[in-house]
Image (tube, rainbow, N blue to C red; front, side, top):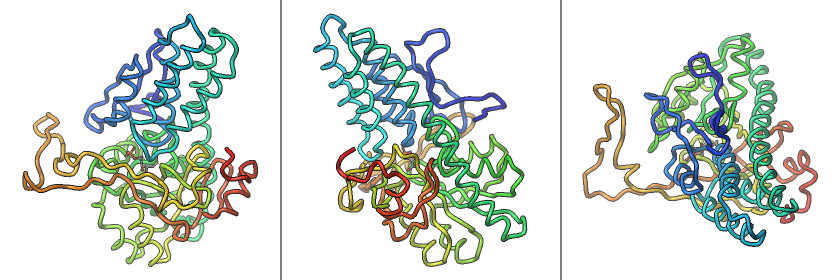
Length: 375
Ligand code: MRU
């Protein structure tokens, strides 16, 4: 997508140095646009863990490039040691964030492909081309998600006689969370580009404020009308007919349709259900967990540092400053995700189309997965 008129992805190989991965360092947005160089597996792992980069698709792509960097640095004199190094670097990358399944999916995809290639040179080439393929596929799938989601927005716009369609979203499921386009925001961009009037209610998304900082910035860069709201406002807006549909992303969705997403999503789904507002989850197939049936019991929920709850950062006198919000000694809890049960989800918007949030719905779109537990 565009930043000040120039096209960017969120992750790419440096033009004159393909051994360096470059990313947009999201810690500085919306106030500063900073590009970070990553040259070691430790740097990639830190960038994921400390959320220089974040969002399910992007951390999957970063893991793909991380494995490519691992291959660049792994000892080349023995295939066994080469593969052992990759496996241990893969474990390091996977340990950074537990909820978004794209991370382990991308590491495993790399390990499988590299293991299958014969000889060190072919393994190196595979690590490179597979990292690029993971990123390209993420971008392509997100674009297709946009096309399928667009039809939902188009239909609401038709019913409203062209009046603006009000979409509520939570966290940042836009292009910054993926390689390009995003998931939940991708249909919004397409609608806007095709002159369908659309307006987005942007949940601020405490504690890291991905909505207020990132989604609002993205939408602004693309010229999409939007309004940032406190996380607790959605129920009121829905009761008053000010939300036509909710679309969020997800970090892991079971093949039965339960969706883990940023903490607070479940409450939006409850409010949407109570008010008859359609509630969609948008995801690429890399975000499905084909092993887990019960999302509430089985999806691991990341718990992050209490500092993220107790402090808030923002621009003050031209400088980004962090201030304490709570009494210094009050403990805080920081559950990063919650799970919305399938029964509260109107549909899943995937790269193959829209389906019911149910085992039958998902497997009808992905028939090759019909034997759960056999990826
Ligand atoms: O903790 P984050 O910022 O990595 O959270 C992930 C997300 O971006 C959201 O949960 C998003 O809505 C899902 S779409 C990747």
